[in-house]
Length: 248
Image 1 (cartoon, rainbow, N blue to C red):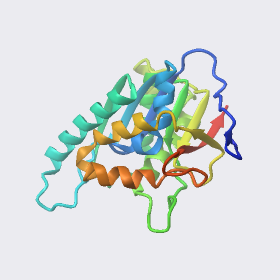
Image 2 (cartoon, helix red, strand yellow):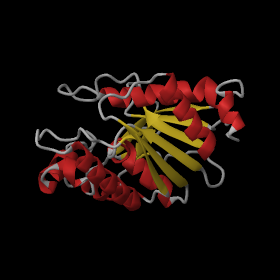
Image 3 (cartoon, rainbow, N blue to C red):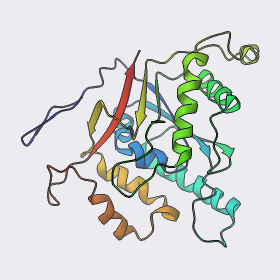
């Protein structure tokens, strides 16, 4: 864990040897950038290979009753691809589960197993299924965020690495696979803190690509500035992203 001292940060090292393949499985377009965009930019800058899978296309991401959900989904796919390009992501994939109705059932678990066995990552990233109340007193966590995290957790263990689960996938040539680590973003309890001050501009630039979601970009930047750490200032802000990290 990166720990804070007076005006000093201990530099964090993941401890990885060589280039890692990092698989990010989250619920919506814009989740990767909001939840862990600074860390993903850090990893991309270091040369690691990052692949996204978004389980929905974000077709409910508007409060306008006249919105066409399919057109919105198409727009959000485009925005997500642009944002991922800013981060340095190799590939972006979308499932077509309805936004807001993601259920971590056996069918979704099998889909997660399929993705993991196909991509064969070293590092797996998702969202914490235990986080009902994100930081702040006026927010609830979206059920899709929790469902995605639970499906990834249950899909990875014990099924992804066990040949007796979903033998039909074995018949397709999708052999069992185990990852080195799982990182759960927006955790209820963090054990790993990454200083993302250096990659904050990249995170913010990527988030600006999600124009349908952020509203006025200047007002958005002001809101995002409020996410700086308590030990920093507006003139010298510092930003962090938090995770629950499981090393196998």
